[in-house]
Image (tube, rainbow, N blue to C red; front, top):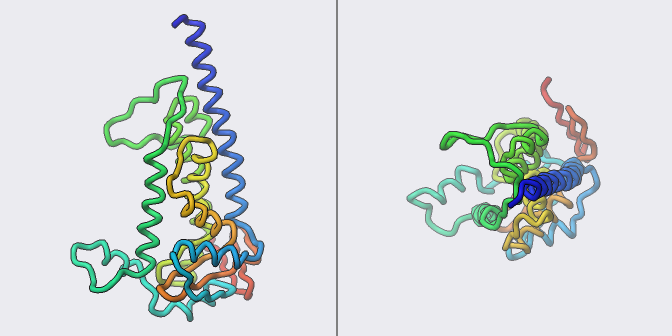
Length: 258
């Protein structure tokens, strides 16, 4: 290939990755807004999505704050309970529905990795030692250095949103104390946004489309939820979200430690 053709091809590939990243930023912003939404939960959409994940319809218990949920959580499985179902000696009987949900979610996310296609790059990726992680860089610098686009999206979308949303929900969890296994609805947007970016940019084709749609609907429509075998406890979205303070619809407020 002639030098001019090589240069033109490299420029095209660089422009492609830059354009893909710009699209990813817009999608990330969309999910950031969802994660901090204070709109009332769409209860019908939420219940249909959870019934889809359960493969049946549990009894739904709605409350206005995570604190208000506490009285309804007795007997629901803990993280320790779920770990016992992946140990060499499992408890007798059937695993709790939360265990099935966690396994299904793990499968869903693994199918994304299996179908991922790396877009062409204008330069080889920098060398690294075997087993060494890629450097954590601002996206623009990572593009310049030729980091794999998969890694740029992981750092710039998934990890970025995880840091943002975990700062929110970890403060609330700390105020609650130990609770059974739950999922975070709108604050699960950190991984859902990453999958959505891969799909909408044409870089991955998750096979479990119906399951992914249910998790997306939950993030767009609901707050936290605790799954039990016969009942599911759900929390309305907050009434107010500020950098250091969150207030729920019953007045319960959590302020971040300074």
